Amino acid sequence: MAHDQSSLLLRKQLRDLNKNPVEGFSAGLIDDDDIFKWEVVIIGPGDTIFEGGVFKAHLTFPKEYPHRPPKMKFVTEMWHPNIGPDGSVCISILHEPGDDKYGYEQASERWLPVHTVETILLSVISMLADPNDESPANVDAAKMWREQPDDFKKKVGRLVRKSQDEL
Amino acid sequence: MGNCLKSPNTDDISLLRGSDAGPEVSSEQSANMGPPPPYQESIPIYHPSPNVSRPANQLTEEEQIKIAQRLGLINHLPTGVFDGTSKKAKECCICMEEFLLGDMLRFLPCMHTYHKDCIDDWLMRSFICPSCLEPVDAALLTTYETS
Image (tube, rainbow over all chains, first blue to last red):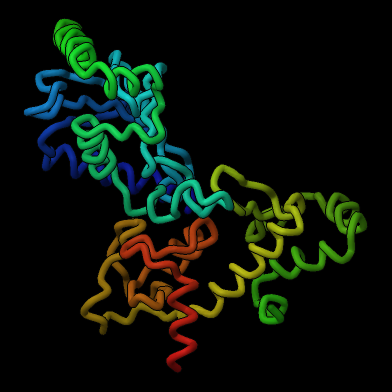
């Protein structure tokens, strides 16, 4: 897909999200002149330990979007098995498409060109509520989540309060 | 995979010849490195597996076979021109644009329809239907068996 087509598609999504906001997050551009770099704010999902948090993240789209996935990185400090210590989100739908010969991940679990900012963020919100500790991006967070759930909860609670203070 | 050789796409012909001709091809290519005609991309980039993107002349033999097979299979999938008569297919869910009269379409065996350019680029990366996740090769084989 040509560059102008990927920017058209992203512009369309930005327009739609501005017109019909989706509950749970808000989205905009970091710099109005660069449609490939988005800033999103995710509201910690209710009835989870992330409730009340206001988490900022950046999405960086490649020129080949929607044939290739964006990269997503939390700017707000996070503590979660599937978020790396540098804030990068590690979920299978953001992994490069295709079938790898080791069969580590099915092609159907990886990136699909039908994903939008909305479907990505809804997946990330559900990941916050429901960590997957099979292939953690933050091993220490995964270990704590599994073995010391109370400590995990306390640590996340502190970060939730910190995220509110940073507003 | 004789069909790949007869494919109308000149890219894969040069790709397949490259494996026979060896180093001569690359010297020939560098000799032709002047400004390419506007309609022709210099050397196509292929994506043999996740996180791997390589120009056609740097593919391993295994990757060349995989890509030649893929090109051949894609060429077997029916195409058509949008004439507005289909009630089901209205929009390409890859580029999210409505089909316009005269748009080239590609029909997958699972009955999902996309712009030809949109889906062909995708199928070279991953051989599944983006809408229903059905593996296209499996569906192609089933079509052959029943017809």
